Amino acid sequence: MKKKKREYQSSELVKSFARIYGFEDKLVAFDIKDFLEDYLDQSLFNEIRSVNIENKCIIIKIDSPLLKNDFKMRKNFYLKKFQDKFGEDKFDDLKIL
Image (cartoon, rainbow, N blue to C red; front, side, top):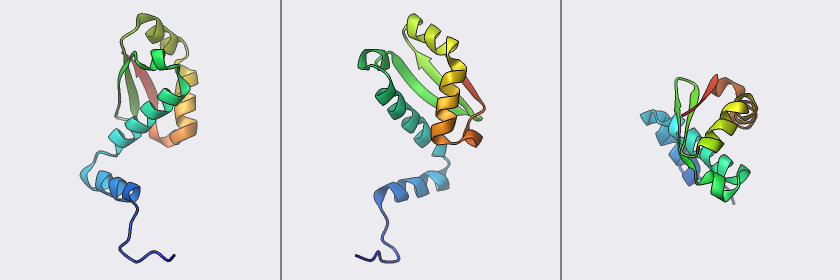
């Protein structure tokens, strides 16, 4: 089946709108949160309050002091994982709050 000129998949449409209206970073933040949901145990994932991206910096807010400390100790490991998965040019730093 051949695609017509104006026939798009919904994911392409969402990415296009994100590019136009400037919220591409929010879509990447959702992808990072989905990645963490797959990577972490469900009980640990539930401690993550939010994931945002500001000025090429991933900001992860975590409720649990133990998980927060673990992320801070393994900051370079997680940053490298995110860079490998989503592109090295997208992120420079990782902040755990």
